[in-house]
Length: 182
Image (tube, rainbow, N blue to C red; front, side, top):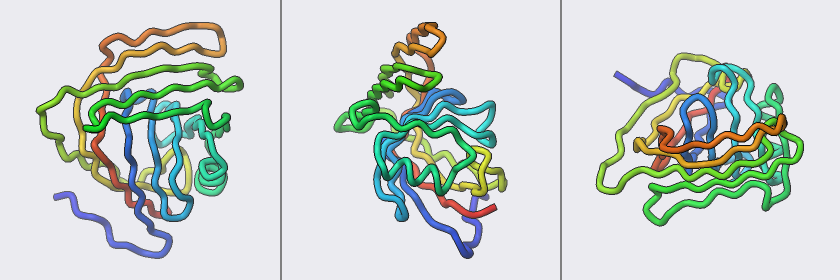
């Protein structure tokens, strides 16, 4: 049974939408935080979700969130148009663009798409008390998951270019997270 842990001091709830990712590698996310507002980010995951990530933000809200919540991570701030996330009306297609002159990933364009007509699965995550991004917080929640495929082009700092064609991805029709101190 997957029941929410009891709430205590420092617990808050956040909502993530649009949210799409290539599992274990890249995430595009609009975080809706009661403490920091609404902002977009692109996440290059570490070896596991318990390790610090590299997070790109395009606003003061995102930079403050990262500095206060996850100082262990490498946070890169780009101009507002340096990170864009667009969502289709039905939420099944997420398109992200990144232009990050000082990051390990310099440019990216990805379209993450789930097919129509298939209902999302409720997928619980977290609950093991593991840190998020190597930090002081853990997260427990549920994603409304759709399996999909990603097309994209990535340009790395070392001039390597990577093409994604039909790469498996996950598009979420929404996700909530219970954020708690470890």
